[in-house]
Amino acid sequence: MPEIESNRDSPFNEEFCTQLEYHLGQTFANSNRPDLKGFWCDGVSWFPAMDTQLTQKCVNDTRKIVTKAWIGKTGQDEYHMTIHFGKSSLRRFAKGTELIDCIPSEETLDWIDIDTHKRTIELRLK
Image (tube, rainbow, N blue to C red):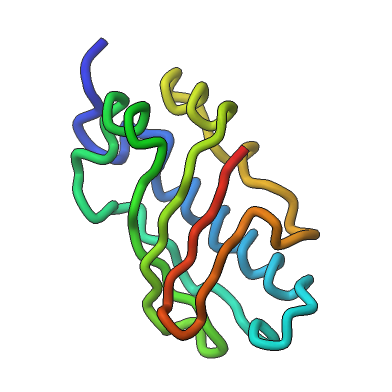
């Protein structure tokens, strides 16, 4: 099977990142963490730090994609984002199918680790 040549051919694409952006905003709004009060997400880049991260081999080997997101009270603070793949999302990525259903519930933060001082966020997909 040929490797993915661009992110438009990848399940990690604009549509997924847009859904993730809105989902993060709802998750922050539902959070009772004082440091996240008023936080929202104004975008998740669908261009990872390195294009090679979008190959099936790379995602299967590392089980993650590193990109950036704009988060905060203004939505404009740039965060280093690491998206970790779980079993379901790895399977879907390998098949080239949508990842949107692999985004966990917006009712809890247990799939998100965010450090507002270091401006890092790690997400765990299903």
